[in-house]
Amino acid sequence: MGVLSIIVFRDTGDREAKVIRVDLIQLIPAPDQHDDYLDNLPPPRREGERFVLPATRITFDAAIQEFKRQFPAGFEDSRYIGDLRSGERLYKWRAHETWVSSLGGAQLRALLGSDLREAVRRALHCVGQVNLLFTTESAALRDDIQSFLYVAGRGAAYGSE
Image 1: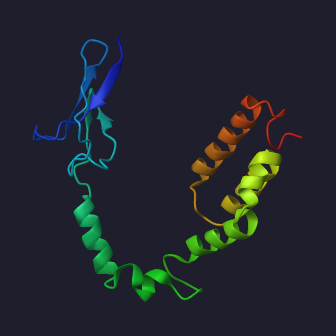
Image 2 (image 1 turned 90 degrees about the horizontal axis):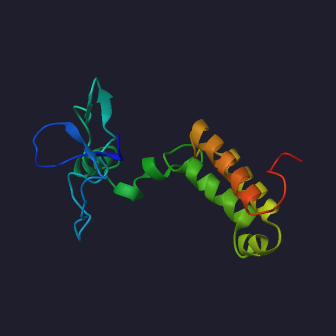
């Protein structure tokens, strides 16, 4: 069937993405890859034989407006920052503190040069302490680390000892 790619054209006026055999044509990227409409598009989903964009989506400008509605003072808004008991940023701040204590300063660089397994153990500990990743993302991260350690010739996969 050839090499297929799903492409969204901004000027077609519909939600349908086009499926194109890219092994038959040469796609030439524009010099400027930024486009207000195309940047951050949700992935097209299959509807029968077609691929379509969701009927509604939030644009970058709309996301900024919604953020400003919820947090009028922006990133300085007390509801965004929190009070060390609540707030949008609290768990992210805790993740930062955990990372700094476990791998901050020169610790990570030193471990990467001397003890990769310990660097991995500490990084996974940081990820596991707070809700930064979805469960599937966390599992994928662990799988990728195991594969990397195996390929890097460091012996058995992480955690299998």
